[in-house]
Length: 194
Image 1 (cartoon, rainbow, N blue to C red):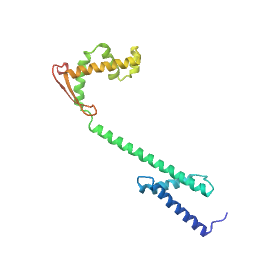
Image 2 (cartoon, rainbow, N blue to C red):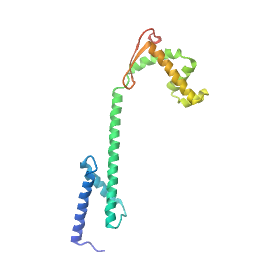
Image 3 (cartoon, helix red, strand yellow):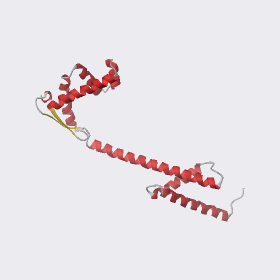
């Protein structure tokens, strides 16, 4: 095996530097932050070095390199989008925990609901107890009661509506924009006011 002569090695180095410059320009034109272009080109060069067998023809070699570069750009955009979604999700989660429902209001609401549940029919109490208190799925509740799933869904929906009517007839329930309970106050003759 012969070692390349100095002029041939210099020409290869110059060609490599020229290709790198073209790749950086190619990438920078296709991403939001051109400063990341060097990092992406570095990733491209790593991918090329990992590829054991690339095309042997010069024309195909350049096309292959640009295809690897386009794939690296796509990966970069996907990673940036995923990071953006994660950042938005984290900000949303922080806003939820910072403004969670008032525990005192939830406790007052639970105190109001208990006597009102007793005023519902047995069927309605059973539907709400299974689905809302025990956390059983509507399909499982339907199976336990021997009715169809659509029938169970209707029963739960009607029971919740009746309970809501009883609650709003005697209590003022204030909620925020997301529906979290902020305050519960008796507004007249109410079984929960004692």
